[in-house]
Image 1 (cartoon, protein in one colour):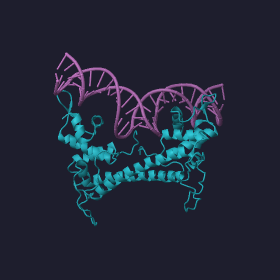
Image 2 (cartoon, chains in turn blue, purple, red, cyan):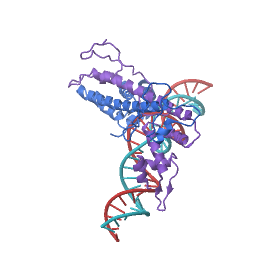
Image 3 (spheres, chains in turn yellow, blue, brown, cyan):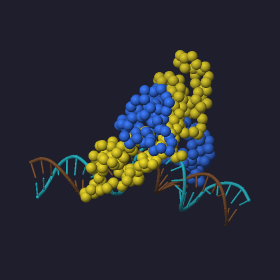
Image 4 (tube, chains in turn orange, yellow, blue, green):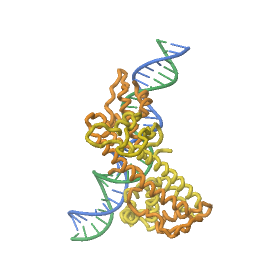
Length: 163
Length: 163
DNA sequence: ATGGTGCTTCCAACAATGGGAAGGTCAACG
DNA sequence: CGTTGACCTTCCCATTGTTGGAAGCACCAT
């Protein structure tokens, strides 16, 4: 079948199918006489495997490892589990980083009037991390908590970075 | 002061400082007679502002907006709050996506022996989403839950994508 | 003057994806 | 038969934010 059909059936679009081939994630597709790439049901199956793994947030590199294990009938399930659990830990780290950001920013936003006046604790905090927040609108809170850490370093960005 | 010193004081490295200038996020730095960029305490302040915003996961585009508001003494805090709350929503979406992945993958991993045997529900699920999991090791659970959704589409990847 | 460090610019790469141009193929239709 | 339109091919470019390097000046200390 043509690449378009394979794309439709696998849920991976043509562009990506060619890309995955180009980086060696999938085997080099056989060609029809026309020069068109030719795909079998088996190929579609592999593409679906890739798509599912991508949906689970696996990197292309990890998927390569998983594909190798998939093809290896003698693999040990421990190998697969190790990759997966490592990925789960990566995801948990990301989640934590995001949650920290949400907490800090929500806290700041909560203390921002959000009206026409220029005073804004969010801006003030970005400009100078030492600023403290005034007490919230109408809540029982110690009011003097020096807000979130937001010190230096650490992995603020969500993007995957080189380990 | 030289760029290296500004980098040290702001927590933004030289490479990034030049980059931020090149994309117009910061103003064009004045030059010393040597041709070296020259930075004032004020510039360092702005760079710190940028770093904090990056730590909170704001995109460069958003930071540009926040910087404009920072410089505008007549800004309304509502504008700042709007940007921030939108960002919080973006972060929450990301967190949700990640949590879904964690849930699915943890579930699969939990059902994987992780020993030398080749049977592995993780691989099986990637290969064919219809496979069902056998009952867990030793837990009270309905055992027949057709595992996580992981249907098609949606935003599986964590990376920021064009809206 | 010589070395080492810091600065300059420019170019490339990463990951994963999308957009588009320029051209060849195929099937269907008049 | 010819043309149209949908599909395929390769190749290049853009994205986002960051890092790496190379080649070439500037500065400071010995």
